[in-house]
Image 1: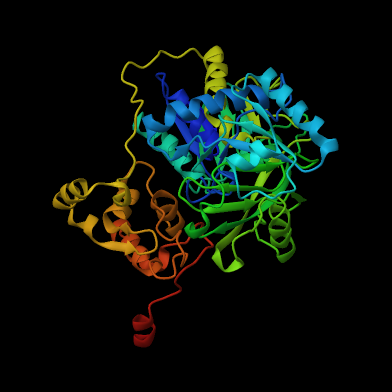
Image 2: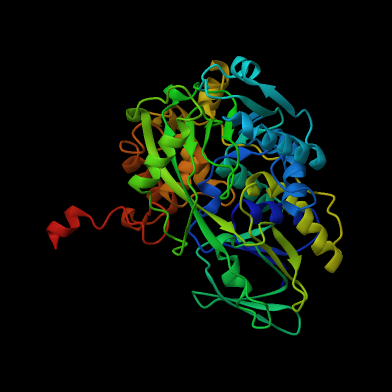
Length: 483
């Protein structure tokens, strides 16, 4: 019998797990995919929103502003990539300047600090690469950029350091109420009991919620967004995150640097039926290019785009987060509809949910909680002396595996053997950036597959790109010839 089971190991679930680990509890996190950060958390804009967009008084507004504060506090403690680069919301028509004023007033009401309304000359002095069609902008100096998988992995690793158990490849197929709490059934037949269940299943939160028959039905609308990622050669086109005035489907297409030095543009916003359908489309990517060109004078040439991708957002018609205990099932807590600014809000949601749990089941505060976490050493960021010292301890840090990003064998080995370590090619990629460069893993994937096979003690044919169906190798040619 666990004290708490969290369903979903995206950024929200991992932040909740870490916060709950501050008290004496038995905590389990169940993830349907082969790794943490496999859903919405891996494919988004990587923006730390300042908090001026959400309607004052909503959970989105409260969680956004508090989350922005927490990201700045947690980044040095947990060593995940984060930079407070500031953001601009552009207005292109004089008659729409009142909308900037509305955003400004929202931000002030939400408690966002340092907001400024800028005229054209002030905007262009901050960002000379913007189009001359800009007439005004809202400037938010507390806006930032963050590595979404870096944040999620840091939270998961620190939670695991503090005793939280993570089980992957554990799709939940049923939740039923018992005398002492809940019984959770997984697709592989395992049954798990828990006093409290937290539903943080992203776009599938409605599926989990609706497993309990007395619930009023929930419906998550899967909203797909497509992106283009440019090479690091284009990373200095803008310094700040560039938004356009929000529309019906959100904050529109943005242009932003990433914390790793690339340039990102997107997303589109299309409601879809298939929650797993994260394919990109020619129409969607063309729309991203067309709309982002409204913000900047000259987009880099298309040949500098190294990849495109799509992600899902979990939208509710109420247009606000749902973070509450069920009215008919005590101890069942929904954390649903966590769309933008969900990434920014996640640490604050962790605090909020932990408080809900403490009210239901008071926990004794731990005196041995480990609040810091050391990231995998990044050879690119170390001094010559630091590199030499690390190589002297472990020669694997001298062996380059990914040439594009200069990632070493030592970094890959660390990614595999850390708490909640990598078991797939994408798992290594998100923890080290091996395969995220110009060639997108074309040269390093075979070597990484071999390292995974050796370290996990499984045949190379069993190593996957991501989930169980993402097969890389179908057999050994020498064995086939013998057969």
